[in-house]
Image 1 (tube, rainbow, N blue to C red):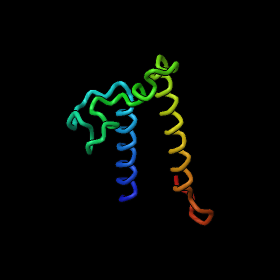
Image 2 (image 1 turned 120 degrees about the vertical axis):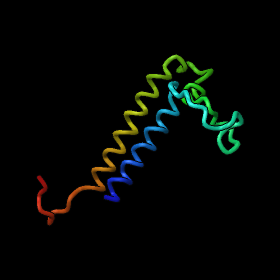
Image 3 (image 1 turned 135 degrees about the vertical axis):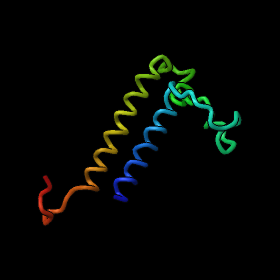
Image 4 (image 1 turned 180 degrees about the horizontal axis):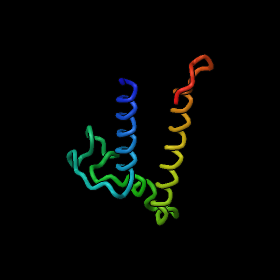
Length: 94
């Protein structure tokens, strides 16, 4: 039960982080100077767009964000599968 709750909290945290990195973030949860006073963590989100601003990749920020999310979620799925792999001696579950 604790493992399932921890997994749900981790999934919700990753989803919130990926949402914050996107241009779709609309919440203002902290003051304008940034979270913990860091200007890099501004309340408007869209960090991928901010990182790519001024480069030739700026028009493709949504595609780059989507590919990054796909890669991040794929890596997390592989990690989860490796950590929750049943041992050889465990009986099969239906």
